[in-house]
Every structure is written in structure tokens, then in C-alpha cells.
Length: 180
Image (cartoon, rainbow, N blue to C red; front, side, top):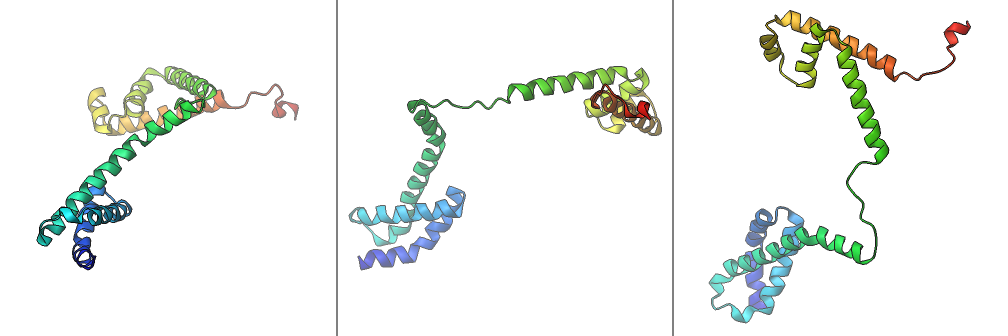
């Protein structure tokens, strides 16, 4: 027992540091080191030479870490299996139907807004804001100056904003301005 304590105290820090790299974080490395020390103690009779203690302990620790990682990788599958066994329904990662419908409607509204732009502005807007091309590439493709590209893009964005504001504004049957 004293020999083990002496060997463990002498080599545990070096093994811990290497386990941080292998396990990826300090918490897992601590857990792995403790588990490896327990296994090493139980199987101390297999150690033939005290000078080989550190590499032997490190090998045990690596195996423990690999087992931990394997368990962590399988955990989601085990949780799914347990849910299914309990008869619980597994939630899908899909968005709710109403969110999907709203997204489709918004996409349609944006497409209509782009189609409403005059062709001169529509090209710049599509290339710059939809296709996300850098300004110099848009200028080159349309064979226009930087100033012209910026001016057209500014005007296109302004028209888009106006169209979307009008389209998305709450529709009321009574206009308070008419009543005044």
C-alpha cells in the first residue's frame, strides 16, 4: 500500500496532464485519473517493475478515457431507446407547422417585393443582397462604377423597405386619418 501511494503521488500529475489532452477537459481528466488509480491499485500485482508505473498508469487512463468517450457517444441513443421503451413520443427537430407557414409566406412576400423593383435596381439587389456577392464583383458583372452600384443598391433597399412596410402593415378597415 505504501509503495502504491508513493508511486501514485510521484506520477499522478504527469498522467493527469496527459489526460487533459486525451479527454479534452479537466473534469473528465480528473474522473479518468481517479478511475485509473483505482484500477491500477486493484491490479498492482500485474506491474513487474516500479519504473514502468507511469506508462502503465497512463495506458490504463487512456483506456478509461476511451471508454468514457464511447459511453458519451452512445448516451443519446440510450436515452432515445429508454424513451421509446417507456412509450413516450420523441419530439422532432422540425419547426412547428405555423412557423413553417409563416416562413413560406414571408419568402413569398420578399419574392414579390423583389419582382416589384425596376429592373435597374432589381439586378443590383439580387446580386448584392440575395446572392451576397461583394460590391466589386457586382460592379464588374454589371459593368458599372462603384458609385452607380451603391446608388442603385441604396435605392433598391429603400424601395424594398417601402414595399414591405406597406405589405406587412396591419390592415384595418377604419383609417383614423380619414375620420379627422
